[in-house]
Image (cartoon, rainbow, N blue to C red; front, top):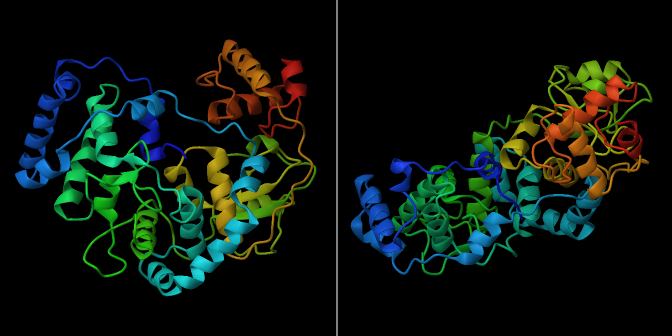
Length: 394
């Protein structure tokens, strides 16, 4: 569905031309490249037999390169994306899974402190509870991306980790499939993360995120804890907002606590204000007239998992629903911009000196920052939501 954010910084950056040292680590004859991979793996402690088994029959997958060159991005609004992904059918299945694996979720929460709804929402959004895990041969995908000289420093270590998994007997390199960028299993994790955080949840002596739901649940919990999740704390809470607020402080890095927002008239829909002492970011994924949420420090794990604002807010909302929250209030958001209008807005903002990144029609962090600054300059409500009124003003 997406490129995970622990890859995203590299995925989003244009790679420079490889120098002599880097050139030895990628490109050229595939056989020589694989021999170099084997030598490095053995030097790092892998057995020659495991390296041979992992790399035997490896080939370049042109479909992987095509996906890598034309990665999809989110151009849907929060309402569009969240209503599609957080469907009633998915909620029903998620609740069934939480009952079916109640003992596993209890163990995960006991050992790693992660709420069942958080894990289950990722499980749903990544693979529909394991139903859609990807059909790219994982070995070939990683060989292709490590051999390609765009980002060998990123994917070569993942290929090394796959060799470790083969040595442990956790994957069959000839048949294991997953996402085009090398993610594996029901919660779509990369080989290095599986090696580092893999948990044998079903006690069979192996970590299989493809076939074992207990393994996937426990491994996801351990990884989420590693990302900084704090047990017993909220991550996301729907709120209602008054007509007047310091809108320029909405979004990230406000420096405010949730209690500061509550004092200004922001109200949790569930009435729970006990976490007011925590830092709180007021997120308005479609401006001040649409749904509104308080994001707490635990929300940072979503930003580590995926950098898309629409994905993260939808996944966090999904987890709240699985944990008992009511459906959000849709509100009446101000009309947004078409793709062409958004590109025109980005072009104008860029000409004014803002770093909006690529002119791609995406409401990314750079565009949100610039929109908020220009709204404030013009006496508009600086909620960061780009509207035709702002485009016309510019």
